[in-house]
Image (tube, rainbow, N blue to C red; front, top):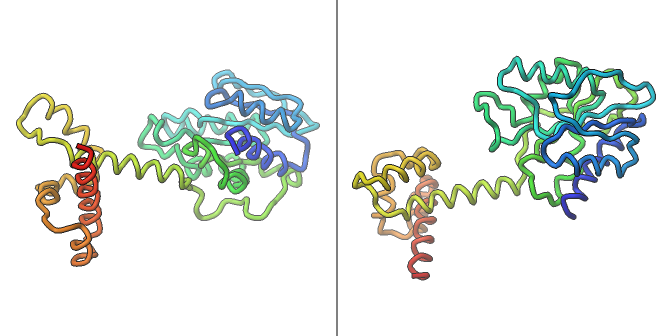
Length: 274
């Protein structure tokens, strides 16, 4: 299965849950909006258009079908009031909102958790829109090249739809709605391991040179807080025991012997390659 097939499966999960005909889909421009438009068109939606949030204007809803607004990369949310206004505008236009928040790595505002569905769920609920988790269960085991965005895709439906939306088992909001896809988690762990390894194998630049001033801050900001402890890295380098002996003697010090394992493994590979 490729990206296109996964998008089609996501669209199918939404369209099939609509008991009433979907007459219009508006896709907000940004992440792969043209591909999403093609996916909706392939399922026989009569009118599929795309626009930007700034050009989105209130319009009369059609009486013969449902209108879906697909948000591909979040809504303006530089502040809580702006986020509330954005949701209010969307809910005035749409019967159903397929919503993908901006990913955490691309989030500009760090004091609001706008990268997660739980933040938006309360704002949509205030406008009378219920969260339906129909997309992720349908595609979770499929291939997709950008799971950091798709892992948070949910659907919000107007509570007034009544029988126009199929109440399928498990699509209501549960106690946990923020999920990280295994592939995204694996990538994050690999990045963290690479940062840890590069820091531990970095030459000693404690001489106050320009290189030391440029490199050191960039490394330690990314590392876990234990690396900020005095002499923690020196302790790792000076450790004479094998990591597994440390693990057997002090299994509760998991962070330490795991860091030691990474250091010894990378050091061994480095020596072998040289």
